[in-house]
Image (cartoon, rainbow, N blue to C red; front, side, top):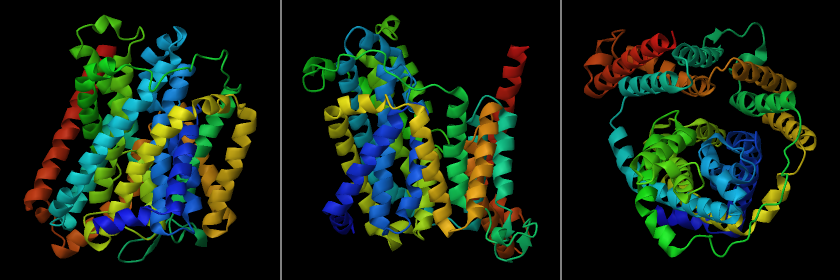
Length: 494
């Protein structure tokens, strides 16, 4: 299976898709306001007519390129292209102002590759082992696992616990529309035959992440410009061998942090970058220099946020639970192909799993080469005014939503959730809990029904089953911890 998976990627067509996806991902990631999540959602309709390997290879390229691309605008404009590159601004901007933009970008690109590659090794060796463990999971365990995922995401997303829970519940409620699982009873269709199959996933994703971001950008107005040409000249990656070796501990620690945080549902690259930067500063012998323009900060941020990509793929492939927003949309890409990620995927379609591993490997290589040699081209792309860029993206959103079922109802669904996403941004309600509730809701309801059928209506086996009981106990502890944390925070605010 390993060799078959590798061979399925080693053909010009698939490699070209990975390269194209990586380049497009870098462009989406480098333009402020046009995130990697939006890029993957926008290109999801393109994969409809593709075979599984080429389709997922394209999405892997977009994922890797978009996560790394944020460093370009973070260093040149002091505006993170993606939330993952927030901490890159802190040292990237001072270095660019000193005329060391080339060195800052070269360092970021190099350690982005290293972070992604190290997390890929973890993904390669841990995923098959974890899949074997989860083969023992039944309805009780899957219900508990989905529940703890929603609880974890709701408790750590955003500044307000209440907003996180409400967002999650709203996403969960949206999954009740359509035919009920197992019984097939129609619910909340309000006379619309188009809702019999439920709310379509793709228009919802495009609306929530692409259209809402377009509305935010339109409200802000203006256009992104580079006021002066930065010094991009450099030899190699811009850093010496001595400087590179001095960062080995920082790099390894940040890669482990990024991979570990990536595994936890709902956290992702933005959290890992901030945590790694803070820990690197805390363990440094010269913490006062962080934020003044040193490569240590760039190494910590970029290694960690790119390492989270491999980490986020672990729960997606082994449990069918996305690690962050982008992998949630990649999960939709699996569904479009009629593939269900989870432990059985390694047995039933091992070739595809190792094809994904190979695609991620080549995406990291293409990211390294493209960013290194195409830097001046990306600088020019940053100068494209939003008044030109945004209408083109909106047109692609409409085409993608309409192309799903060739009906305008999906376009209106996209518009509705675009307005919902815009309102959530205005009121600072996190969208990650909504998305996870929408994605995991059907699985939780289905496994709950199956479990109750199996136990003849008794909830006791959900608690007495060793794995399920342990997970539910951890869920309770997370809820208690979140409430205590929220109460303490409110007392400090008073």
